[in-house]
Amino acid sequence: MKTLKLCIALLMFFLQGRAQNYEEAAVPVYTLPDAFVGLHQQKVSSVHDWENFRRKEILSLFEENVYGKMPRDFDSIRFALSPEDKKAMMGRAQLKEVTITVWRSGKNVKLRLILFIPNRRKRPAPLFLLIDNRGLADIDPTRKVKSGFWPAEMIIDSGYAIAAFQVNDAAPDNKDHYTEGVLQLYPDQVTAPDGMKAIGCWTWAAARVMDYFETDKAIDAYRVFVVGHSRGGKAALWTGATDQRFAMVFSNCSGNTGAALSRRQFGETIKAINTRFPYWFCDNYKKYNDRVDALPVDQHLLLSLIAPRPLYTTNATRDLWADPKGSFLSPTEAEKVYALYNKTSALENNPPGANDPIIRSVLGYHLREGVHDLTAYDWTQFVRFAKYHSRR
Ligand code: GCU
Image (cartoon, rainbow, N blue to C red; front, side, top):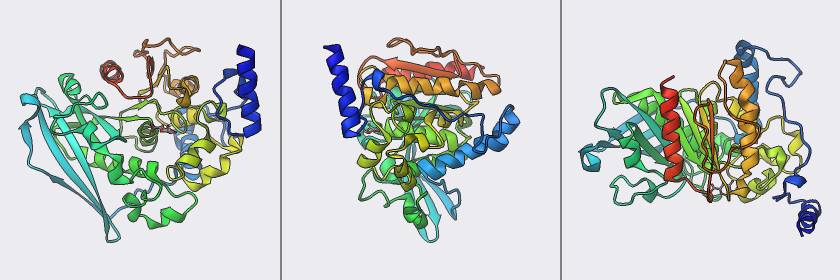
């Protein structure tokens, strides 16, 4: 029976060329691009070589081939605060709602930020920022709706500030409307083969939110942690890679073009993601739909760009689409870049069992029992990880 199932999976895999494979035995043999060997075979053996040469090269390879260019220029930025509620959450937190307006060439984009800061604190508060790819209800400032997707009370009670912005402000998550946000400021990017699309815009927005945090004295801008789930998790990783002001990165069930290794072609593939979501990544990425081996990067290199900062990734047992094994292998592959900085990771060769989080490691990880989601369980581990690494 098992052999028959495998034969059918293999047959589908080869005949349809769709590569929606869920059988480990059908994962092709692959060779990953080496973090320490440049495009022209230059070898890297020190932090200096990594930071001054290979890291930059990898970052531009991701910009050119995957996420698109990250524009850094704009004319002005303004932060407008609504009247604050100093006694939100029954007195436990202060609520700030900030509208961030960014101008470039006469056009502007508005990003709305929701921010709770714990009232019981002696110093500026460290903060978790969620890139919210779900509805506004999940980040309800009134707290009438309380969602495990953004358990604000629990985070406040743990001593952290918590913030969120909704991705649709930056780029509507829709193939016909994604240009109606940040891209209005950068019209050239829309037609360029390496122009950023929706996920690049969400990442750009996270950087503008960080610009705000740097002005807020109640926030410890040196301890701002970015969090994202699934498509938001892909954006969180790209944020950590492109903006080193973020001190830690938490990427939950991010799957393909997130933490999962693309060359494994397990679950969602590059072709599948580009077909369903042609407006997430740059147009050049589509060239690799049927030639993943030609891609000069794979996702372990994206994770490596976050080194030496602590990075936590997760999976769920029933989220095969996101390739739990491939998403565990990529942080283990990134370990060697962390090792350059003498940061040791406690990841083992095989993924841990369900609900057995790895916290005492610069590369943290857990496999949650259950389905594709971001839950209070996940956040509880994020807080443990942040606390552990803040002490160090
Ligand atoms: C789809 C998509 C994934 C993505 C997920 C999500 O399943 O194929 O790549 O991560 O949506 O964002 O929930």
